[in-house]
Amino acid sequence: MAYRWTNDLTHDDVTPKAAFLNRRQIIAGLAAGSVAGSLAPQFASAQEALEPNSFEDITNYCNFYEFGTRKDDPARNAHMLTTSPWSIQIDGMVDTPGEYTFEDIMAKMTIEERIYRFRCVEAWSMVVPWNGFELADLLNLAGVQSGAKYVAFETALRKDEMPGTRFPVLDWPYVEGLRLDEAMHPLTLMATGIYGQDMPKQNGAPIRLVVPWKYGFKSIKSIVRITLTDDEPPTSWNKANGREYGFYSNVNPNVDHPRWSQATERKIGGGLFAKRIPTLMFNGYEEEVASLYEGMDLAEFY
Ligand SMILES: Nc1nc2c(c(=O)[nH]1)N[C@H]1C(S)=C(S)[C@@H](COP(=O)(O)O)O[C@H]1N2
Ligand SMILES: [Mo]
Image (cartoon, rainbow, N blue to C red; front, side, top):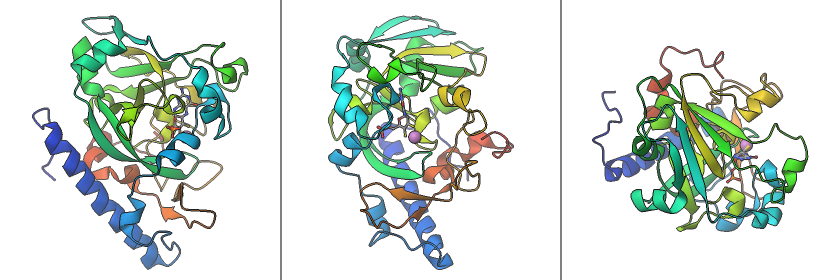
């Protein structure tokens, strides 16, 4: 397909197109599942599978280990996090390194709504209406230098405000990374809210990453530092268990997690007897991002 993301696409071009492609692929994926007979879609229609999850589901079923490892821990504990004032240190291979205050960033960015499917590595999914801006716009503000190849991210680490960090569940602070082309992709969002409101603390206030074609753990929350580098940066889950969590972590129904299948998922909010739905290549964003990985063996680079 000749179509390719370019810098001359406006936000208006990107969002409806992304939504449309996503919808078409999901409908195709659901149809394939039901034809095979093994996967009856849990939803009355493919449309329903694309409907945003409720604010309650999104804010009460969370992974944010700094506040505890249970799904309801972040909703209970994240109120302790001070999110104002907030700033992000942008450093490494950039023209203008320094502390960028949250207010200053917000004043310079165009906030828009993006409804994205979100797929956790634990084989559940949600549909979330995020507000945010493209990470590329922030990186361009700092000025990416020509030798940069990767972007490293770091979450705040405050033992007094984050009870989960008193335990060595992960090697704190939580860190993540993207290849520069992944970071610059127009689907890659710095999210600052959901449902038109400021980001709830349990979802990564005041600012977090959202990379919709990768497993949820790549979408690092409450970011305080962004570093441009020429070396693949370490990531928390890869350090914790490199056999289970690789650097790329692209959603891929054909590459199983060593302990469970990634072929299907359960959409949160479907109820106790919810049936599983098929997981789509790159979480349904194949048309937009497959070209980033041309020639790469995605079973080796998982
Ligand atoms: N700092 C930090 N970011 C994080 C996590 C975490 O524990 N700490 N969990 C990740 C995982 S595993 C998932 S699935 C998503 C969950 O985002 P949500 O709670 O907004 O759905 O956040 C990701 N970002
Ligand atoms: Mo996750």
